[in-house]
Length: 137
Image (tube, rainbow, N blue to C red; front, top):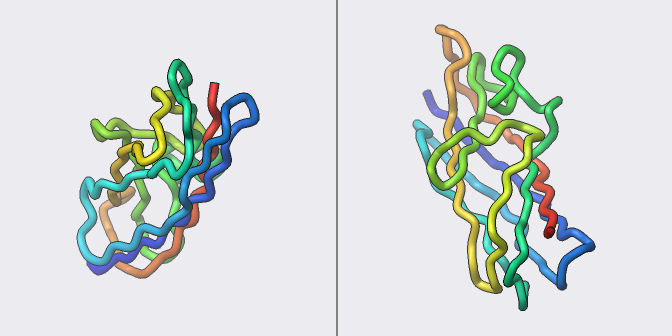
């Protein structure tokens, strides 16, 4: 199976925090994908002390039918995309994940992998944009 993932992230900082900006980016993979790490890097956040950050990846409507913790894909058959935190715990589409805010140059670590949704898997190429909402509390 030869699968390719190109996932774009749009990051939005909340209004209740000091000026904070994160980079947008693309993740590109070819081949077997299992627990591939990626990070969101903080571009500008001068004073995060005592702040929390809440991430929301996509919406619940982005979920694979029958597998609410995974993102649906178009292209390969019977394959879904699973996002995970730094410990590889699943981050379901549309659900929130809270972490401590990091300073400029810091990063938030995540993982991504493909999951088989049914027995017969067919490879293919896909592009799966996922909007990432970032709010500071």
